[in-house]
Image 1 (cartoon, rainbow, N blue to C red):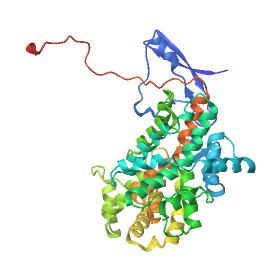
Image 2 (image 1 turned 90 degrees about the horizontal axis):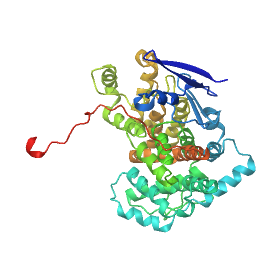
Image 3 (image 1 turned 120 degrees about the vertical axis):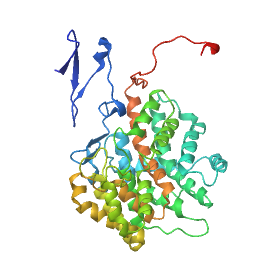
Image 4 (image 1 turned 180 degrees about the vertical axis):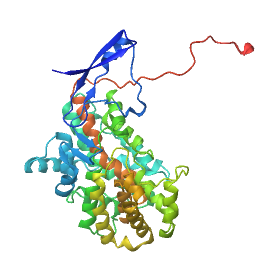
Length: 428
């Protein structure tokens, strides 16, 4: 039996609102019956509104918990790899040996891009932001793979998912190579997913590429930690675009556009920019004081999180990865990274930060890690988009598989003028 909440309006109007229980988390009040009373709700930012039902990812911000299909992110980062996590998010279960092998073979089969896509890059300025290029090129994939755009066909949806997961590293690396004037590197399918990405980023045709297992595992963990994060702005955008019947490449391009916003995917870029602004460890007390001053617009980037009111579970993993990469690359002794570690120490020990639970988050450590690997700041959000593609496409597939998708159409609280009559120019 479904529980109900009773809403009384103007004493003479009542609505019985069904309460839906979740597997985990708070119950949800179904407000659909309000339509019969001529009312609807007002919730800017949708912070109190469930726009969909999903079985993919769960976050408990108070506990600092993140689950992919029920599996803790800590276990997946330690024991799994990115492509296995991709299979989990897409299919709902971890693969057995045969399923994983077949899945990897499918992904490797689609790593190449159509040769004509290479010419797209020549239309962009060399100094174009890589995210601008990614939006354009990913959206353009629909003009090359229009053989599988029937979104009502489950096999075509799966094929589109495989193509996107496989081609994103190739396109991301091409964005970087184009910006520095180096030749594009083709994927090498004898390498694993993360090794292949690093090869396409840093390899050159004139010299053999030297793999670093430490760096490959680090980028693989970064991909895992960013693979999905429930109904965030970009995921909601992908679902909204998908609700209109748009093709999967257009939907992912919409997600990339949303992720580019500095309040969303640009946080790890902001961390590095902040470190450059502080400049030297001796300036930290001054900037800590500015951060504590409510009247000062300065904010320490990479500390605290809108969702997590406790320690970001991804940050604990990313901290270990960060120190491994710093040790591997020898960058730990550079002034920038010494500054970062000094700032981390203060934030973990200062009563102000502890009281307000402003712990270093995943963006703080991922920004430092990517920079230590030699990846420029402009590429940080591109790598985020690469990793998040599987989350976006999993939510898109989940939404379409229900068979009763309604086009997204939020309401508004209108505060404009009431109806009025047009005034001729000479009487204004």
